[in-house]
Amino acid sequence: MKVIPLGTSSGKPTLRRSVSALAVAREAEWLLFDCGEGTQTQVVRAGLSPSRLTAVFITHLHGDHFNGVAGLLSTMGMDRRTRDLILAGPAGIREYLEVLQRLRVVFVTYPLELKELNSLTSPSAVYETLQYTVTAAGLDHRLFALGYRIDERPRPGRFDVDRARDLGVPEGPLWGRLQAGEEVRLDNGRLIRSPDVLGSPRPGKSVAYCLDTRPCANSVKLAQGVDLLIHEATFTDEFAVEARQYGHSTAAQAARTALDAGAKRLVITHFSTRFADLSPLLEEARAIFPDTILAQDLMEIEV
Ligand SMILES: [Zn+2]
Ligand SMILES: [Zn+2]
Image (cartoon, rainbow, N blue to C red; front, side, top):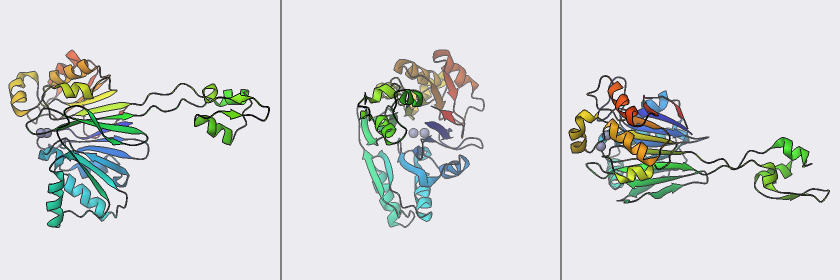
């Protein structure tokens, strides 16, 4: 998986930072988490193709996370998308889209599967494919907000070509069956089992996305043992009172969540425009959770 922050500014865009959006790119598809205004431009800059977008997950209905949805959906209609699209987020997105479609502001000409998510007091699976699961849980913001987590399923171990040859398995369909976990019998009567030629299963990777929240138990649950946690850090601890008041986290609080959850790496994002220099946020987080980086628009993070 590759994680690409498309917007890292809180509330409004700056010349260097767009508002919240983040792409998680997998083999032939990508998922979008939040879609602030201007996300379409960032998608083009990141070299992502809207036709390969599978699903959009919105955290909450504040404009800096949501105002780009109408434009993105319309562009995909204009591009004659035929593939279906999942759009998940808090209750309200259906009504919003219905109004815009009635007013002919938005044209959706492809199958759009809306998933309105309510309360979710503990992490629950909201979207599953053969390759991964997306889980969501309610966080603690000024209005209902969701955090998300994506877990890839474990992949089979690597096929050991030399070992297969040594065991006398001829190249061809038998290799495929062994890779699929079956056992095969050779012409000489010898039985070969899948584990004889496959390495141990490779664990899937996981990413959690906790934006616009005060520190809360569900953030820690969503981030449990995750390979990469993307967490908001709107302020430094100096502004802890404002953070609490506006339903946000400080960099230190984001770091503590990563630490409590046993996350492997932390990316902080959603920076208040009051900080021209972000190094105090990074220092504050690293003092608690050393493996922290600052999100930059369009950077690519390999997971
Ligand atoms: Zn926000
Ligand atoms: Zn918000």
